[in-house]
Image (cartoon, rainbow, N blue to C red; front, top):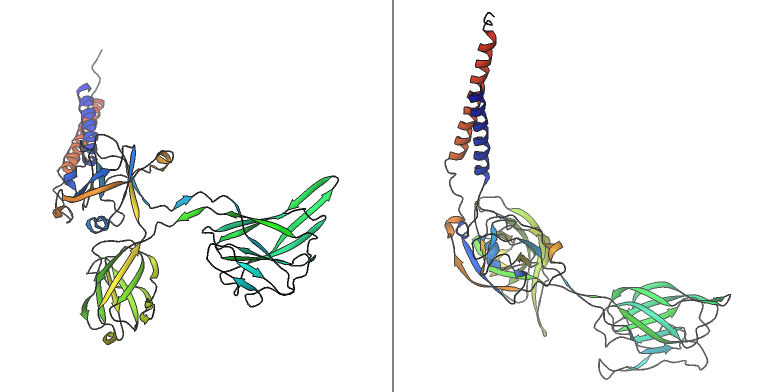
Length: 448
């Protein structure tokens, strides 16, 4: 019985070992088609790399799962991919804006004001009709032409705050002193005294916006004292990382059908048809598909134009589309005679790869494999407090070659068969033990 138990234990242990071997897969650079040597800009614990178009064109998986970063020992280092974030610049310190009282009885416009502007960065000279000394203005004009930031709040300042006042202030913005946009309809303003205490509400928050001029108008009551200064507070500036684009020429298969090949699964969010001839207008249905054997899927219908003007060519704006990773695009045009040569411009938001400098350099970015994948690790909690300088990519080099991109024929599952044989052996051992136990229980006990 002891020998049978030992056989069973060995069989189960061998089965577990075979199962672990079946799931183990050590990655190496040769498992991928191509690679880039990474050139760091300085010594750091982590680096970031802007992903070039070749990565999208040389990988197999839509989610860029078939890429990895290796160190000099050929080990995979922790990495992840994220959309390139917008940079946030600190808010500009508050600043006083040039203030001009408007003493007329009607809303001030450019027609009612005499304005002299010598330069975009000097204060304007302004006068209004109907000015009368001693009258508290109902309106004020702020000159914000020197600003490049978005205004987020306005702080009113009096030489002597008005006593026991409560009113509402309307705020508008303009770029030409003629057309005005409503910003705040009726912001509460108050200056109260009671029991030896003072309460002053003179700060007005705004939706962050840029404008050359701001107009302040009392809606109902007018305070007993005129506003002497206005302090502008600015919003934090967010720098848009911009867009990356690729333009490809059309291949006309049939009349009215223009096919475009982006060369890979680019994450397209904007598309535009570039017309070869000026003064052209056409309507087109845009389709896409992943593989030439798939059916075309309608993405959008739009009108595109290119009109010549004295200032140059005026062209239609790119069309926003839902995120689309299809490689092939089709423009179907009802009147192909007016189309001429066409080109498709596809635009997407750039992404970057961030990796830890684990192990010895040089580091290698490998990509392109139909069978190999590397596990990503979200490094956001670890890199939030450290500087992550950029790194650049050297010239591309061949690793495993284009053969790694093709789906290989599944190999003979030798390990799986070994595992099944071990498990069958274990079952046979259990059956043998059960038979032995059954035979021993059926024997008569020897006489004592």
